[in-house]
Image (cartoon, rainbow, N blue to C red; front, side, top):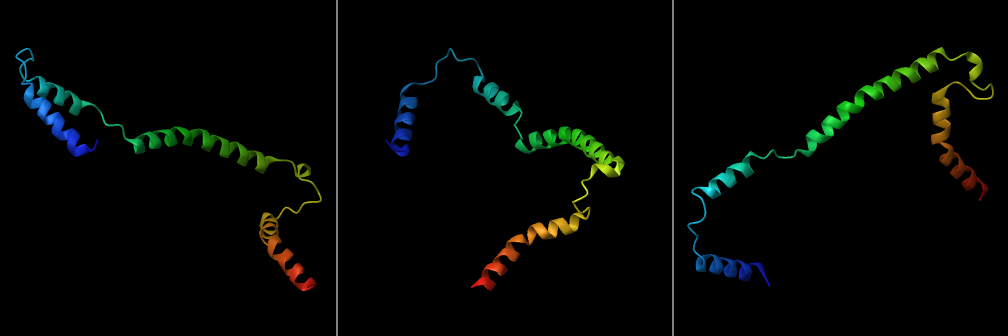
Length: 107
C-alpha cells in the first residue's frame, strides 16, 4: 500500500469518528507543549563532553611519559640503535623506494 492511499484512509477514518467529549479541554495543546519541552539530544555535545573528560588523563599520561623519557638513564637505550629518530623515520619511509630501485637495477 502506498503512502497516498494510507493517508486518504486515515483521514477518512478520522472524519468518521468525531472527537469525544471525554477528551479534556486543550489536551492536544498540553501534549504538544510537553513534547516541545523535551530536551533535544545533541550528538556534538555528547562528543565534546567525552573529549573534555578524556583531556586530563591524556595530559597526565603525556607528562608521565615525557618525564620518563627525559629522566631515563643513558644505559637504558640499546647501543646498536641510533638515537636520531629522524634518521630512523626516513629509513623506514623510504625502505619501499629502495627495494623498488634494487629490483629495477637487477632487470
